[in-house]
Image (cartoon, rainbow, N blue to C red; front, side, top):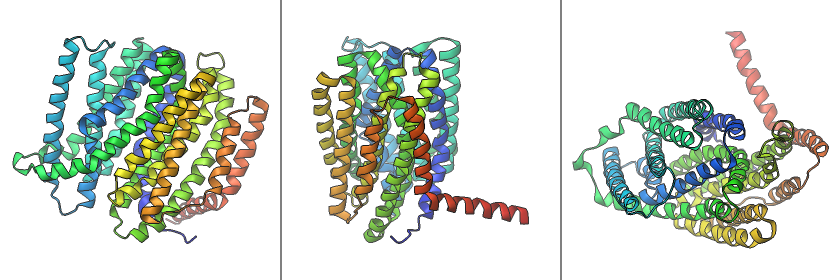
Length: 472
C-alpha cells in the first residue's frame, strides 16, 4: 500500500494526546485510590451516576456540540458570530427549562435519589465543558483545549486527594471533585476565547439552528444507542447484581477507558481531517490506510497490557475487594478496540452527511448487546453481561464497516483483525501467573518485531534531532 501522508493528522493527534494525556494519568493515579479508599458500592454508585450523565446531557442538548465543529470548520461561509450566538441562546434556554422541569419533579417527590442536587450539577457542568471544549476546537484554538484539559485533570486529582483521601468524604467527594474540575475547564476556555463575547441577539439565526439540530439529532440518537451497549449494561449489573458488582464492573472498565480515551483523541483529529477533505477518493484512500494501522496499534497495546495487568493485580491488589475484576479486563479491552474503530468508520457517515447511518448501526449493536446480556446473565452472571456488550460492539463495528464501504469504498483486510481478537479472548481464560509472565515476554517480542519498521523510524527521527542539537 502506498504510504499516505498524514502529517496533519499526526500533529493533531499529538496535540490532543498532550491535552488528554493528563486525564489518562489521572485515571491511572485514581485506580489505587479507588482500590484503597472507595468501597465497591460507592464506586458503583458514582459510576452509575456518570453513566446517567453521559446519556442525559446529549439528550437534553440534542448533542449540539457535534454541530459546532461541522458548521465552524466545514461550513466556512458561515460567520462564527452566527454559530456561537445561535448556540449559546439555544444552550442556556434549554438549560433553564431543563433545570426548572427537573427540580419541579423533585419537589413533587418523583425522584428519590441520594445527592440528587450534586448529580444534577455534575451533569450541567459536564455538558457545559463539552460545549466550551468543542468551541475551542471550532475556532482553531487547540492550545487552550489542551491547557484546559491538563488543568482540569490536575484539579480533579487534587480535589480527590483532599475530599476523598484526607477528608474521607467518599461518594460526595467524588461528585464534588468531578463537578468543580469541569467548571474550571469552562472558565479557563472562556477567559481565553471569550465565547460569550460572540453573543449578540441580532446574530441569532433560527434557520441555522434548525440545520445544526438536523445534523446533531442523529448523533444524539447514536449516543443513546451507544449507551444501550455500554451504559445500559451498568444499569443491568446494578439492578440484577447490585452496586458492589457494578463497582467491580466499573473498576475493571477503568483499564479499558484508557484505551477508549486514546481512541477518542485519535477520533477528534480524524473527524477534523475528514471535514477538511473535499475529495471523497482522497478520504477513502487515506482512511483505509489509517484504520488498518489503528487496528494494528490497538492490538499491539492490548496483547501486552493483558498479561502485564494480571501480574500487577497479583502483586499489589490480591488482598483488595477488586482482585477478581482482573479477569474481566481482557473482554473490556477488546470491546474498547471494537468501539474505537467503529467510531473511525463513522467518519465516513459524517463526511458524507449521512449521520443517520451512525444511529442505525449503533441501534443494531445496542439490540444485540442488551438481548445478549439479559440472556447470558442467567448463565454466567457478570461475564454474560460483558460478553453481550462485547458482541454488541463487534456488530456495530462490522455494520459501520459495511455501510462505510457502500458509501465511500472504504475497505480493510479482516484476517489480521480476526486472529488477534481470538487470541485476546483466549488470554481472558488463562489464570496461571507463570504462563502470563511467559506470554508477556513473548507478546513484547512479537510486538517489537511486528512494528520494527515503525520503531526504527522513531529511533532514526530521535537520532536525527539529537544530531542537529549537537551540531548547533
